[in-house]
Length: 124
Image (cartoon, rainbow, N blue to C red):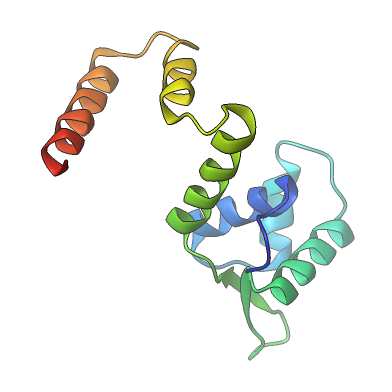
């Protein structure tokens, strides 16, 4: 994969990570539920994503089936590293504190975060 995905590419990748595989029409219909976008725009973005190596394409039938060619976790890690570097001067701590300060986490979320931190401490 060349570089990190654009916002539009990430939106399509997110849908394909959920669905596993889909046609351009299926992705377009999902996108159209929340925003105005043309079918040809969706088609063009997905073709570009295929050429960048972000999507694979099954061309066995007349209607091409697309699927993610990049792992969700790897892509998220790349995006987080870039975001932390740019917005928080490389400080993961500042990112976490800012994220936790944005809302009121449920007790279940607090317990999950605490368990994750306990796990990280054991690994050090």
